[in-house]
Length: 246
Image 1 (tube, rainbow, N blue to C red):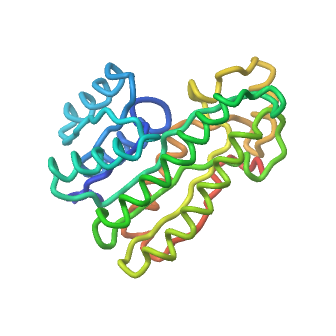
Image 2 (image 1 turned 30 degrees about the vertical axis):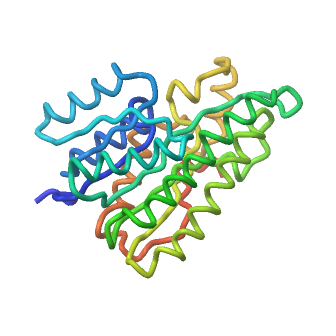
């Protein structure tokens, strides 16, 4: 018996990177998966095909999660197909790797819309649409605990979603829903590498006690644990998955 057999998991921003790895990992554990993407249909189709070829069930839904109407439609599409949503992983996000003084108004608005508002909209939908005893995991970042130049706007949005998730854990606890945060350190994805030199990446790898940057699977396995029955007594917590960077 697979640990997530009979469960339905919605993973935002899951066509690539950490989100895609989380989707694949939850599918291998037996969950039916709702893939969410904005533009990269080819990447979403590739992940969907991998899940289906391994014997899983999957639905790919195009939705801009910075749009509250689109988020509502995303949840409705998942329920229409699978009748329920048991697991929500708030993963969608972007990085503007610039010093605060260099960030334009448009760039700031965009990172707030995608990183912060998307989680608010998803939690608001989950309050009514997630199944009783459901699981929520919000992907934040270890940068909220550090003072790294060029991460100001990104870290601010991630700190905001941490607090949203903690308070949601209190509000949704009466229905047996758990809500936790996973804060990765540097992870080898396209998003992480954007705007960085090889020297930047080497320096960040050296900050970790384990001497490397993370892999997407390092994060996905912790998410799998938090959405499992074994983690039923864990809620409102922020788990640093960063190789000992802090």
